[in-house]
Length: 124
Length: 124
Image 1 (cartoon, rainbow over the protein chains, first blue to last red):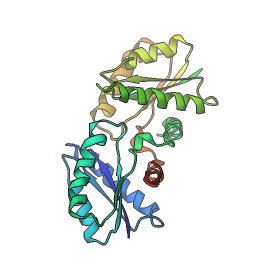
Image 2: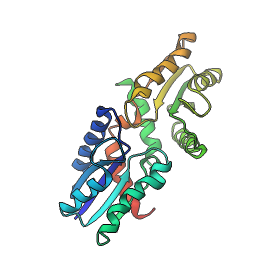
Image 3: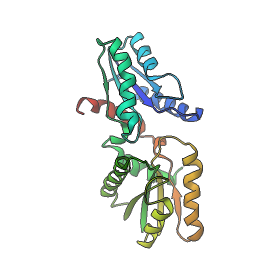
Image 4: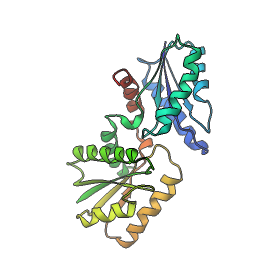
């Protein structure tokens, strides 16, 4: 059973964390062909943590997990901190493949998303 | 002449700022129908600043500018700091319309971008 874990930084602002949860719900709504479970987790400042999120997916039957960093640039969080958190669970469960996708800012679709969003200013 | 200014936070990591500049180039390459100029600016830690970026566009002939916040959540930077920086130039040039687009994390296309990016993990 394939699962997707969207990983955001986490914020002291509850509304920012809620935005991530709402986005995760929208992803889940579009993901049924590819992922049987979609959840989110936070690097810091909000729950669940990355290990908690991964363990919950595994407990619910995930056998193959993709971690997607919801970050715009490849700083230390993406390069070091997220892999280290993932590794905590991967060491305990080497039988479950956990791959980390390239962070969102690296998407080849980002330029066209920006152009669409710039046009959206007139309706917003 | 319409112009688009992509506004990022700015980072102490030069590579992160370069990522924004490279993305801006890709946006420019796709924007010729809608924007005759596309540039980027930074809220802090990198150049140009938002007022510098806006003034450069105006000097190059921009008569209508859209500011696009390259941010994932609606924190203080998006709600207060970027509008305050834009206002510095808008006050001096009330004849130039400057509109601020909704920030990137609010895009209705973000969920499908995330799903595409999750799939990209297998090629990356």
